[in-house]
Image (cartoon, rainbow, N blue to C red; front, side):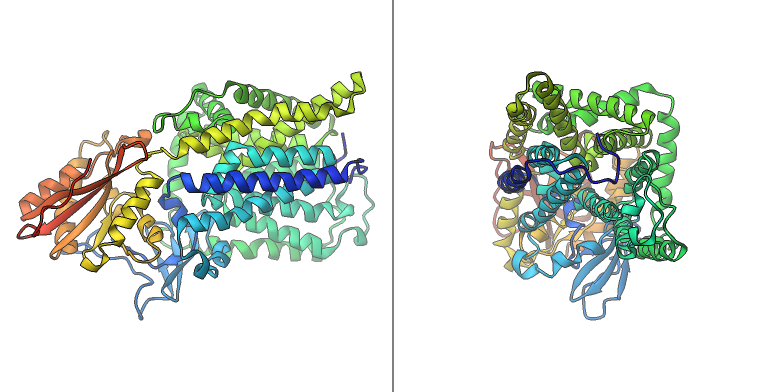
Length: 600
C-alpha cells in the first residue's frame, strides 16, 4: 500500500526486477514474431502507416452517372492535401506517398511518419512493418514496468512485465498494426512518468516551485495531448486517472499560471489537426456521433448489453482464440485462464472500491480498476459488442493479474514466512495465459474472416507474376483495401471501390441492397474494364457475422447485360484447403484466348 505519486521504499530485488524485464522482452519477441506471421492482413493495418498513394473511387458518381476517382497523391500535379471519404481521412502528399495526418476524425496518423522513413527496409510490406512495429510493444512493457516499479515495487513490476509479455490480447494487437489502439497507452504511461518526477504534485507536498519542474510538466502535458491525438477514446482513461489522482490527494495547486499556460499549449499542439478537421465539411464526426447517440438510447436501460460487454471483456482477456471460434478450428475455451481473469477482475474492483472510499491504498490497482470500469461503461453504452472493443486495455489485463498474484503471495508469506512462494503463485497465474497465447497463435494461422494470411500471400504472388499483362486489379471489400499493394511490395497498384459500393448499405437486412449493388456495377464496369480486369473478393461474404451480401451476383448480372464475360480465375485457400479469396477475370468483348485456370 502506497500513497500516489510518492516513491515507495525500494525493495530488495532490483536485480530480479531487471532480469524479469529482460525475460519478458525476450518472451514477447519470440511470441510476437510468431504471431506476426500467422494473422491475416486487413485494411485497418494499411491505413496506419504512410503508403504509396492509392486510387480510390468516390462514393458518388458525377452528374453524368460516371464513377470518379478521388483526388490522389499520385502524379506530378498532386495536391498538397487530400481529403478522402475513406480512411485515411486527411493526407499530406509528398514523394508519391500519402502521409496520413488524420486516419479518421478521432485518431491521428502523423505520429507514425517515422516508420515511413524506414521504407527502404520494410518496403511497405505489412509483415515487415509488423516486426518493426513490435518496438512499440517493447516500449509499452518497459514504460509500464517503470511506472509500476515506482508505485508498487520491484516484485509487482517484474510480475507485470512477465504477464504482459504472454497476455493474448497484448500479443495480438502488438504483433499486428493496431497502433491506434496501443500507442495511446504508451503516451499516457510516459506522461505518468513525467508527473511522478514532480514531487510538488504528491499529497501533502509543500507548494514550492522547485518541486514542480516546468519541463516535466510541459512534457507530461505534451504526452497527454499525443495520447488523445492518437485516439480520442483515450479521454475515457485519462479522465479516470485524473479523478483517481485527485481522490488520492494529488495536488496541482502549486502549478503557477505560467506553467498552466505552457502546459495548455503543449497539450493543444498535437490536437491541432484533429481540431482543424472538425471544421471541414463532411468531416465524419456527425455520422459517428449520431450512431453513438442512437446506441446510447438503445442500451442505457437494457441490462443485456452490460452482460454482453463484461463477457467480451473477459473473453478478450483470457482466450482470444475462442472469440474467433466461428472462423477457425478453435480449441475449447481455456477455462483456467477465464477463471483467473474473473478472479483478477473481482480483486481489482474490490480493491479499487476500498481505495476510493478510504482515499488511500494502492494507486496501481485502483488505476486498473478505473480503466476497467470506465471502458466497460463506454462499450456498454456506445457499441454493439465485439470483444475487440476492449483492446485498449491490453496492458491493464496483465497488470491486474500480476497485482492480484503478488497480493496473494504476500498474504501467504505473512502466514508461512515462505518468501519463495511468489514464484509458484506468479507462475500459476501467468502460465495459463501463456498457454492460451500459444494456442491462439497456432489457431490464427487458419483464420478466415473474409481473408487469411496464407491465401493473401498466395494471391499476391500469383498476381505479381502477371503484372506484365497490365490488366487492372480492383477490390470492393474494405477488408482488402490496400492489402495486395502492401504484400506485393509495390508491384501491384489496386483500384479501391469499397466506398463506391458501401453507399448501398450491402446488408441482408436491406432489401434494396442487391438492386443498388447491381446498378453500381453497371456504372463501374465500363469505367474499369477496357479490355480486361481482375476483381478480388472474399469467397464467403457473410463471415464475421455482419450479414454482408455478396457483390458477385450483381457483377454477373450487370456484366451479362453489358456484354462482359466474368470467369472465376482462381481461388486461394487456408493451409487446410478452405477457399477464402476468389479472383475473378472480367473481359470485354471476345473471351480470353485461353481458358483461365480455376481451382477450388
